[in-house]
Image 1: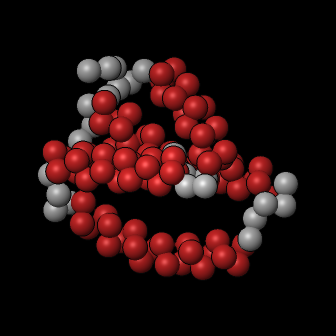
Image 2: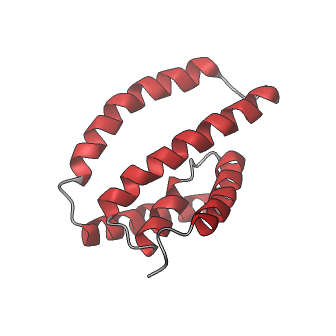
Length: 121
């Protein structure tokens, strides 16, 4: 297990996640959650903690993309409004899933996403 209190490690990984999230729009959670689990967090704590990082990264990415005129605020706000309800449902659902099951579900989602992106024209 890696030192959970190593701020340099977390900061450096944050740079990588921020770059990937801003470039791909995937939000960073697909990288942050596995990292936190690797560092010894439970699945539930990893997901919750990742949202703090994602919030900070998302605000920064929004500022950068806004400067480039890459933002459709109407669509983003509508998706976000629906996401508020979904986030409440998801937070309650993860409390019902064991860490082992969560890891398997998360891996299947990542593999599905990878396959979709790989085979998409």
